[in-house]
Image (cartoon, rainbow over all chains, first blue to last red; front, side):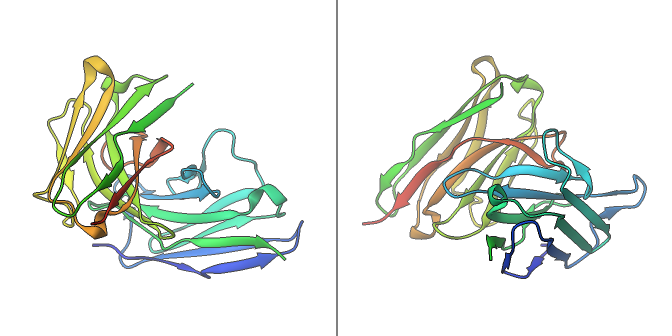
Amino acid sequence: DIVMTQSPDSLAVSLGERATINCKSSQSVLYSSKNKNYLAWYQQKPGQPPKLLFYWASTRESGVPDRFSGSGSGTDFTLTISSLQAEDVAVYYCHQYYTTPDTFGQGTKVEIK
Amino acid sequence: QVQLVESGGGLVKPGGSLRLSCAASGFTFSDSYMSWIRQSPGEGLEWVSYISSGGSRIYYADSVKGRFTISRDNAKNSLFLQMNSLRAEDTAVYYCASHNGSGSSPRQYWGQGTLVTVSS
């Protein structure tokens, strides 16, 4: 199974400041012939299901604010919130769908400092 | 709009059975791969199973293989998870989720989840 490791486990950021979450996979999730990284990011607020933010590592889901961005390739990926808003407090998960079983990172909790 | 509504969760004793259902609306269910994903209390996300749009391709996590069975009824826009020989470690919120494409695709829409508690 591909192991997804996120860092940090939690971070506290001041309103309006940048938040950066890293995700590392134990093997590449880049499908070379399609030039696509099989990597998604989700946001989960308390008491709610996960919400898809990005897929193919950097394709923003409809309705996701552009202060969110996804980047990376191969085994190293990043989710960035350029200017943290109060409504961004949540746990964020990366997810590889390159191979079965799908696997998720352990989550990163983002809070306001 | 897209809606996925899970039901069927509850308290069950170890070794017991439950059948979860997921009612889908707002999209073409019969064209969509579907997954069950679970989340233990205070923990992360674990993929459980997925089924292709027509039901011919089915995959399970090793942790549930031989005990859980996924199925679907496209005429009724419904997804199911039959859970047998339940263990304490199966305690979790179970979400149904639609794929944004084939099996190897992100989970685009999620239901609110149904809680399964396995305890004596």
